Image 1 (cartoon, chains in turn cyan, red):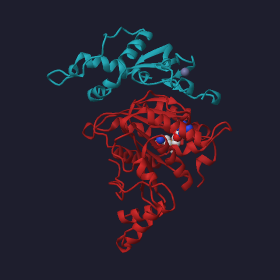
Image 2: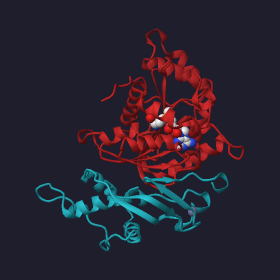
Image 3: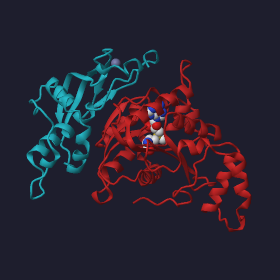
Length: 131
Length: 274
Ligand SMILES: C[S@@+](CC[C@H](N)C(=O)[O-])C[C@H]1O[C@@H](n2cnc3c(N)ncnc32)[C@H](O)[C@@H]1O
Ligand SMILES: [Zn+2]
């Protein structure tokens, strides 16, 4: 599961819908793996306004990754004059699209429900009394 | 042929053996691919987007989303949800690029508001009409799903769901649930009145290019539809032609079934895979 995905996933329980603590879900006992992916500058540029930078910082920190800049980069700084991806873009690509939580769990800050992650897939099935 | 939906719950039907058979069957693969391409055509995305694939299965559609070339506005990123761990296992083996959740769409869509540019679902949402336990109902599950889908799409976002309704009741139960959630909704039929009829529910969130809006659809005036019908010269109608579809629609409207108002999609033939 990519850090990109963790920037959007929320707790699935109805009772957590309106609780701000239900987002983001917090990774625990996470096994990280970097899986190479082809860089897609336009996609990252399109996604950037939707990325919650504070959340990205928090999750990176919780995963023990190097700390991120205070504020989100500007997509104007994504390409060199020669049209090559800049280091800024490459770093963001690595962080969002290549860093994966392969195993571990995600914990809701509101209800403390734990969603298990196995082989990169999170289990969001809820027993019906919790739906 | 009996419908899988009538045999077993989805996670049991799509067990290891069935999921492997499904994913390696070249006929299935080509049908699912052509429906995915049709959905993409309807979504009309012109730039790399973030897409939710509901009932993503083994990632047959996802692979196509990841493979849309730059000239056609891709490649797209996608997240998938599926209730069958065997189907997701097949996806893992095929090394698809999207992230996937083991999740029941009838329990909602666990992404924050405005996450997705678009959503697709191929051959899956009819399963929402099954309620496997006594504490849930199809209506409740449909509501949970469409409310969640609506919230997870950004304004101007679209969803295209190809599905296999069991009967006209199921078809309108599904489209009504989408409309109630707030979507602008329309139904598109490819190859109408043939064995390979394909039904696409086309949904938009506020202000998108929609073929039918909520108000226009719920305002369908039965009398009017019939009067319009009588005026149309039927001799010019070819089966499957725009006029024919329009007339069929008028008939359906007269029966009180939800059909989409006419649009640029009406009567367009399905394109083959790109
Ligand atoms: C015919 S397969 C289609 C798979 C994929 N969309 C494709 O086109 O190849 C139907 C899929 O819907 C999934 N499904 C059925 N009910 C579901 C539910 N309640 N939530 C999520 N997925 C479901 C099944 O597990 C199965 O993978
Ligand atoms: Zn929660």
